[in-house]
Length: 337
Length: 71
Image (cartoon, rainbow over all chains, first blue to last red; front, side):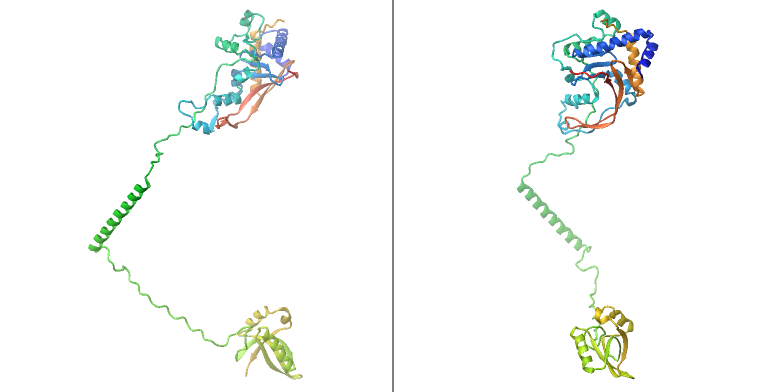
């Protein structure tokens, strides 16, 4: 709301003339200025208090009534304690929960007046500043007077600010921990006595168990015979693996009648063929040497690797041959006469 | 200086400031400053004695002074 609107609104509400309202505002501003410059506080009852802060700024503290009316939407909301502090837990019942320290902190948080503000000026007791400071009659006739108790409080303060009525907010009570019924005091135990007690208990329990067992045996409830007889049969002997020729890429050549092999070379010179087969066998391969009759070149000697039962086995094994051997290979079936 | 303040004036001014503050609108007084509300969110505070307290939100009426003063 701008200034002119404010003037009009005050005129409408108060019934005063516009000139009067402007004059009243001017007086109000002057009074606030003068009081603040003098290092004192000016309180307008029901509205709040004007004073200079330590930084030299003009500060306004709304009165409790006005603050409450502004915060009407939060009515009933009180500070809720989430975690009680360690010092609170140690408090004895004689010290009420939420002592002075906490109340002071809450007051600071809520902007309530505290004694700290009152000690800004250390001069002696002064008459509390009011809007009208010319005469006592004027003050009482135009400004609602403060209650006697408040006057006393403010007069004794003797500072720039006045003390507000002590409307301290109720502090949430901490949960009282029940002690005693679930916590037993630890008794000092004699270790020797404890050991003797334990041994006696074990002996008694053993004797009881023994006699109970004998009694049950006498009644036939318990017998020494096993409840279930299980015959242990010897495991069947594993089948004997017949030793004989076996297929594979490595080892020595076995006397198969028919097998598949991976053919590598074919040479006409027998000594050269023996040499190549010898090289393969020296590397651990099962080098196979066989002869093939060729219509043009006569007898050729074929060098091959491995003996396999099927053609698929031979092709699968050929994939694992190293690169120089894997070139130009084919799988051939050999039938020995 | 005549510092007589009329009761009707003070009551009307207070009422206007309250009404405007409730609607979160500032009130300007020439030569003095501007009254406005500041919203403070709900916050957790740790007290000096270790208590952790959830403070409710609130609206604070403050004065933004027109003049800068130096103490």
